[in-house]
Image 1 (cartoon, rainbow, N blue to C red):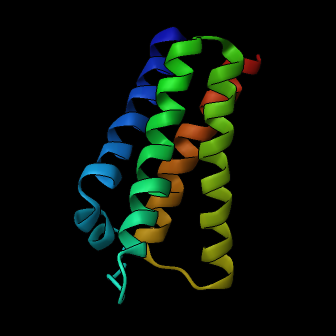
Image 2 (image 1 turned 135 degrees about the horizontal axis):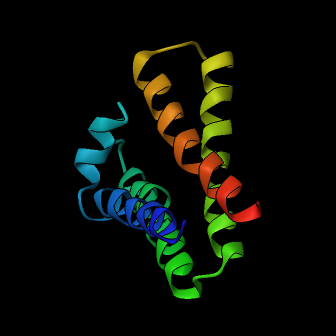
Length: 115
């Protein structure tokens, strides 16, 4: 179980690094475009970048089951938002894949640390 928790935390950090350090790449991967200001880049660096880095580092730092459960809740929160978009905004392959990944990290992280 410990190794799976560490993998989920490192996955969070790794994916967060893309948003933080490669926001243009992340914008493209998410089918987003730059606007008239740099606020889009700022949002990607913050919400798709350092937020995930902080989640992963925090879970590793604390190393408690509760920290890894919280990591799972964060990923499940993203999955719920993605599922909402699939239902309300329409289905696409990319959204479906992202939903599966988010749920595949979030649900086991919660399950493994609450049981």
